[in-house]
Image 1: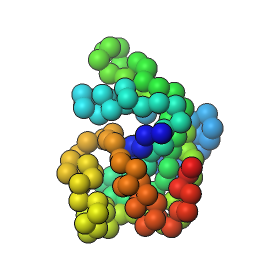
Image 2: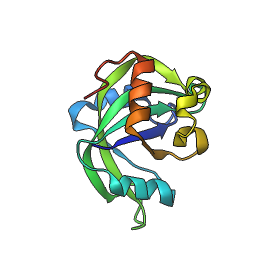
Image 3: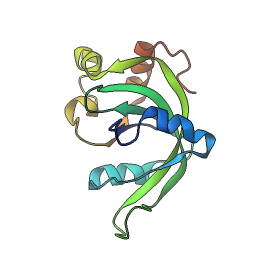
Image 4: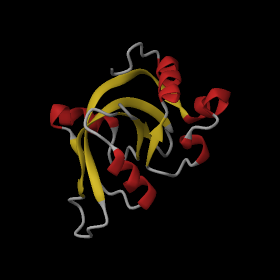
Length: 142
């Protein structure tokens, strides 16, 4: 299993919006960055991801699971852009803020720290474990 981070502006698509979709999940659409698109192409059904609220909150608030691999993005006719489908797995017991992540030297190499603008990015197994620990999530969606 691989781990990822999905960033969303809460005013556009919030964790609550994701939760409402239940097991049906939702297409993670609108990605218009080649690197982020290429990361989505690597995703497999069952991979897990952190759901990150950008803008003011700047915090990881939940865990999602990839339920459909890369396919054409339904919001555009441009064949360059693809999407994956994700469903909510669990809300973190405690959100983990970007500030907390930046203050932890063990996470200094995390892509969220190095390239915070990228909307879809990989997370290492070690980063996943550390953030789950910070969130107070024993199993962290596994």
